[in-house]
Each structure stands twice: as C-alpha cells, then as structure tokens.
Length: 346
Image (cartoon, rainbow, N blue to C red; front, side):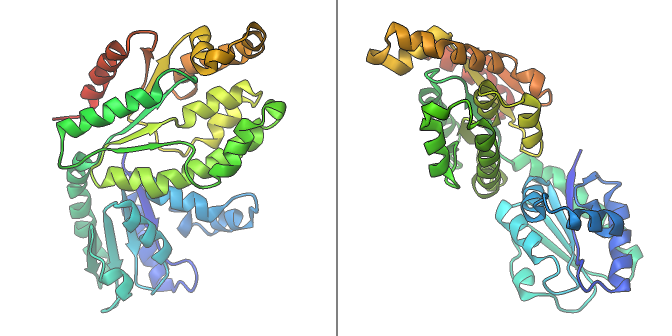
C-alpha cells in the first residue's frame, strides 16, 4: 500500500484552509495509507501534543522519510516547510497545492520532484491528485534496494559486503551502490563505549536499544533513504536484526525491541550469515581463545545465534534469508549473489 505524508498548516489555520485540508485528506485516503491523518483531527492532535513521552518531530521526520510521497497544502507560508524540507532531502515526489498566487520562494524555487498546482475550487483537486498518483509507479521503479548483511561476530559480513559492493558496481557503473554500516555517526561514540563495557554487559541492554533507535532513525533519514530515492542500492552492515540478537541476549524483552523498531524501514533483503558459535569465538578471539574464555562466552554466543535463526518470527514482514556462512568465502558469495539477483533487475 502506498504510504503518503500529508502536510498542512496547523497553527493559524483559517477555516478555508481547514476545509481544503479535510477535502484533500479524504481524497488521499483513497490512494493509500496517510501516515499523518491526525493533522485534521483535533482530538487526536491535542492528545499527541499533550503526550510528553512522544517526540513528534523525530517521529514525523521518520514518517516523511519513509513515505512514498508527500502531498502538502502550502497556502500558508512556512506552515509545512519542515516536512517539505525533509521530503526534499529524502528525494520523494512532492505535490504542493496552494490557493494564493504566490507561495514561499523556498518551496517554489526548488522544483526537484516537486509538482505545484494553484487551485481556486476544491473540485479541481480530484484530477490533480489522480494525475500525481498515476505517475508514482515510475518513481518506485527507479528506487534502489536496501540490502542488509547481518549475523554474529566473525561471520564474514564485512568481507561479503565488500564483494557485494564490487559486484553491484560491475552491474551498473553509472549508479554505484552505497555501502554503510551501523552504528551510524549520531551518538556512535557513546554506543561503542557501552559495547566495550564488558563488566556491565547484562545491564546496558535497554539503554543501548534506546540509543540505537535514535542512531538508526538518523541513519535512515540522512543516508539510507535519500540514497535509495536517488536510485542507489544500499548495503548496510548490521541493522535492527543485530539489536534483537545482541540486546535480546542481554536480557531485553524481544517484544520491546520489536516495538522500538516498528517504524524502521524494512530491508528489501536481509541476509543473515550463519556460522556456529564455536567458529564465531575461534575467529573473534584468535590467539586469546583460552578454554576459560570460550566457556564464559559460549552461552551468550548461542543465544545470539538462536535469535538470528529465529529472526523471521520477530519480523514476519521482512525478506530474511539465512546463508550458510560455514562454507568457503566463494560459495557464501555465490549464495548471496543468487538472492540479490532476485530483487535487482538488470
């Protein structure tokens, strides 16, 4: 189903604009899921504004980034500029509707994937909205794919990601892929400090989940989604699946982790490289692999691996494939290419 973000002025909204917004929303709801339908529902809107635990800005910016398009009622200057700006950064198509002769030059002069229409009567909008949505499939066809490589430590994610990057370049030199990884830059230093705190490894799980949620939202909005919308295939080393496996093994309730990640962009393809717990420890510890250390870490590794093997149960809508990582590097990559070729057209 098409995801639509509807932007309109809330503050200083005139009865005329309010009526137009309600009309536009009614038409958009026939086209798909309107993420921001609450903007013309005073009861819902006031309830959200009163909820101090809800970060409306971060939630709505993530919604804009993950929407297939933004439709805005831009008559009131600045009324929806923040949402418009995020949509422009994300590279999604924008339909701007307005009643005045002139609108904000910040919107009018930036025509990237922007269609503007000045209307005098509401019944004019039916044809305009229909025409805009008729063209959306053309944009979707050009959007890149989001591919994740994940798995327990030592499974070969980095090596295979580099091989996949080179393979995708060989397929399309004009639009090279974007290779990225988690954690992203935002609060990354704090996260790495917590990751390295072995003394409190079982006590930091909930805090890490919250920090990774912020980190992942920023990563999606500033790197992954804009790249996809420019037609680039994105390869990410680790994603929300790591949070479930690692923080789930730290004692955080898996349902809380799933809830924290419910608004995150699903990967078009998530490849879990599976190796045995023994092989993981052998590769990671190398010359430090004493019997005592093996015994200490083995239960944690077993738990992490089991979460990965059960990942489809926690994210049933995601396209998750388990790859046998115990094979040779060449055979692992052959299996990866087979899955990638299924989702990327020539």
